[in-house]
Image (tube, rainbow, N blue to C red):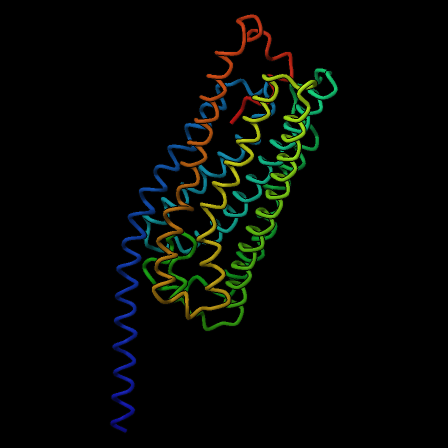
Length: 343
């Protein structure tokens, strides 16, 4: 009997020590999240203000960027609330975060798809020698993809939210840091109900599937844009130097935005995989390192997208200032060259 007591006390001491160690990690994560989310909020807001000032009615190609920046803005706001609130108000925040994660994935993919379509359209105009006819309205396909990108995450996560409320899954989470980025408190949450465990697994699976689908699709689009760029460079007699420079600028954005996506969500996807398939590994030093890495990267998505947008705009302005006459700059909204000077 005394052996049982000693073993029980030893196990209790180890669990207490582990909980204290993770508490220190969560305190660090909280402050990092406050900083990164604040910077992302400011970055996303600046992109939205810049886009709105460019007359959306006459520049429909800016809408995908506006939707992407809006999702970044909402996500950073949600992270700010999660880092600032540790009470019953944030117990429902995880369901909202799941919708915003998928929004971020799908609107990033939607933006990259529109950028790829722009490259293809511009390349076709260069090869054929015809100037495209551009409308000042968003295309039907653009409206549909934007609608589906916004509606699918809501439809997917609404049953999860309802079942979680019916099963009182949120009540089983008593850790004070449960509202941090990407369910940081899940390490110590052990819902006794089977329904809650299944819902948690479904959310992790949906997050990973959304990440992999977005990554695979963007990789395919990037490969297609690179092939068109190689053809444009080889067709020296058909594509002028200015057109090739324009295509290179657009292709550079095709590389940068997916690179930001991979950098921001890679650690989070790896940590979610460990929690789903190797829970014991996620509770050790590897899990703590990935937890800090994901709050540094995923929490900075709005800021990094803002940096890419700012660099792209400054490069476009610099190129136009050195390659266009005042007459061409005044008429650029009538030619294909005006089409894709967006972030």
